[in-house]
Image 1: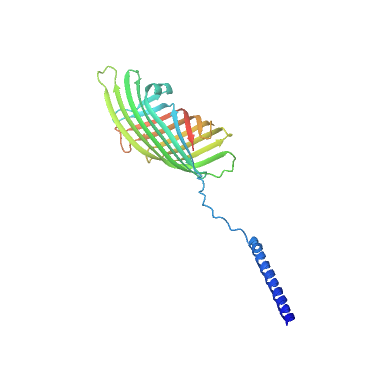
Image 2: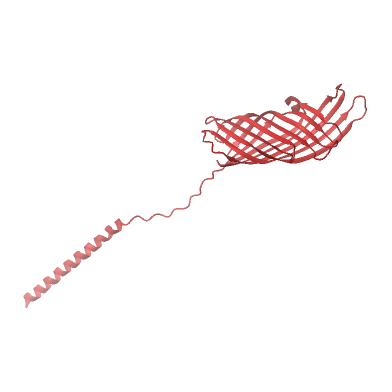
Length: 281
């Protein structure tokens, strides 16, 4: 009887040991299987893409000469030829600036010139007729362009299309020789010219660059013909600041549509050197 009980106890012990061994193996397998699982990705916050647009704000001075003819109402068109020095002597004030935005594919360019000057001269065959003229001028240009895929290192070229707004206010007084009085007239005109053109940039190296802009317009929509051109050599002092020197001209041939004798006539070229300071951001 005792032997029977001993055999039962030994059998129960063996079964307990086996159950413990199996349980230990099962527990040992848990971390092994967990280690085999791929790591779960950590949640990440969305990153905002950087803007591809770059901007340039420029202030500049234009030392311009003026050559052409101006006619007001019934007065005959009179020649105006003023050198840079003469314009500076008679310049009452001026504000000039431009703004450029580009993303490597498109560009937007705006330009503004506000100027007021006066001019006095002796005209006529004998040079005894006195001319006094005051001229106020506002020129605003806006253009949109597309950069062309030239495939030429460091050279960029874009075709542009835009509008140029012109406003001229002229006061003119003529005093013929031997007369005690003057004949005075005043007139203001404004018009808008469509334009097509080109914009180019040559990056010489990390510091030096060349910019150029040219357009032609009018086509009888506003003026008979309008043309503008600029070329300049620039230097990057820092990644944000540059200066440039260049040369610019602007030609306008405008006559009041459908008018004779009393028409407002302006056929003149402004031209001269420029100097500028630009902020890039």
